[in-house]
Image (cartoon, rainbow, N blue to C red; front, top):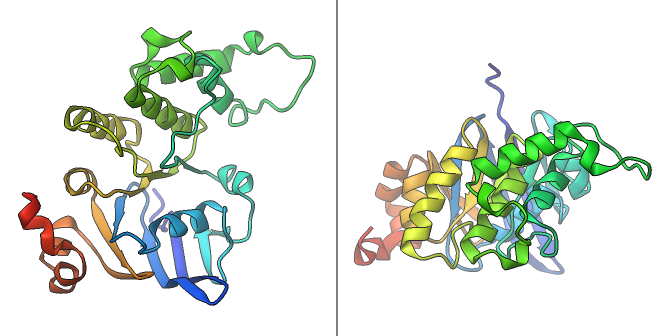
Length: 254
């Protein structure tokens, strides 16, 4: 098994006009690690995700995925190199069924390209893999349900399925439990652990219960800089982190 990092950010900066949002981020994530990125509002967490996934290009610095430089590539090009992401706002095909959503996500990874003379119903490998993912995200009983008719938690589960089904081995989840009840959040953490087993995971999350329950390591981003990157226990005990961000944790009961 390779010991090379899955994802490496080196002195990454991002400016919008004269405003510097990301200020020299360095981060190295190993294969199979689950990393939570936390920080106060405005710290640059979503911007960092947008840089990694190709929605923005860095102003300077470099980003490598599996040893290959990806900064400056388009999002679909980065996706085809093995990185996928979900968004804060659920991003699914609302007028397609659960099954059709998942089938769309597996086509490219299985080698199916644009073709006007092929019938999707005849793509047995894609159909089988879509059914497998429906079972993995526990939506097989909603196979023919339009995605727009699912509950919010079910839509989020479907988005996780779409994100994972394309075969990515580095996965970015942007606030995956936002808007969920405590019960839904607990189930969703379990689902994330199940479907990302063996994958490299980065997640932005505000719920500290989710962070400490899911992450192997935590990166603390404050004003565009990572001030700590370590195990949850060491991050929680870090005086600088407590001063900058986690001071209210004890009052929150975490």
